[in-house]
Figure 1 (cartoon, one colour):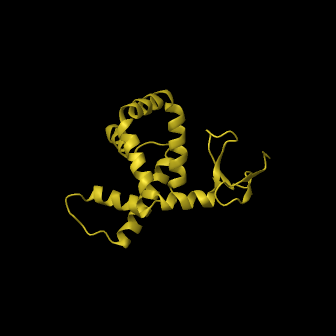
Figure 2 (cartoon, one colour; figure 1 turned 90 degrees about the vertical axis):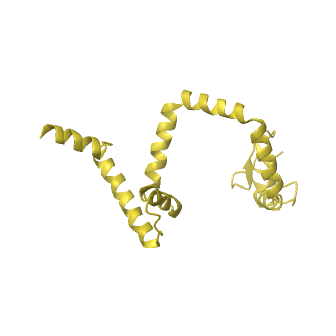
Figure 3 (cartoon, helix red, strand yellow; figure 1 turned 90 degrees about the horizontal axis):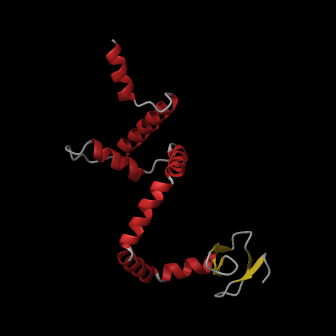
Length: 154
């Protein structure tokens, strides 16, 4: 098989692997899916319920093994995960989803049962961004810890 081109087993179209015509799949001989991306998406959409049932059944069957693996992975890769989390959070400073901001508002005002408006979401988003930037400028020092240390000096 040519390294550059691959034929889709569903539609028969030839596409290049370098230009992302096929998804990666480590269990196949050449390392790519046998269907092109378009056919794979179409198949996944048509069989959404079947795939969901299978994944749920697999998870229930392997729940303990998966939890054990995840715990062990987190234990062995703390530095790597911390680095990844830091990188991810720095990216997300500018693009906080409405869902996340709404969640933050609900957490903040649990007892009040407020109706959250788009204006509230916009303002809260700006507050979160400012707080994160402030923390970054202070070198990661928490405002509360710094306030307590200053209060202790005075």
